[in-house]
Length: 91
Image (tube, rainbow, N blue to C red; front, side, top):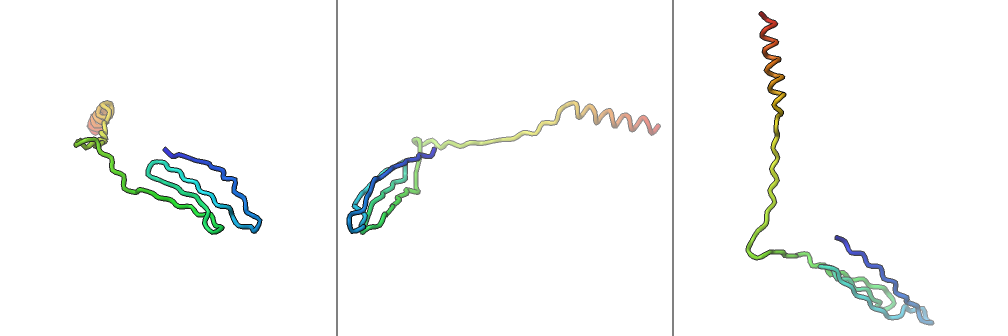
């Protein structure tokens, strides 16, 4: 489930037009975000832990999906009647 975070940082420039220093950090699950100013630039750093291991003890859970095609019994009855009809009309 995604997590959305909106942050407003009221940052102003000083009299020389240089961005004032600020720093903001947040984390959500395996993602950590850092937003800060460095030498008049806005820098965004993302740290993503791509390897996430989830185990429940020694048990491995698997999901097996089987599909089964079933032919209705009335189809066999119709085919049998058609065969009988064809055999009787040839006599």
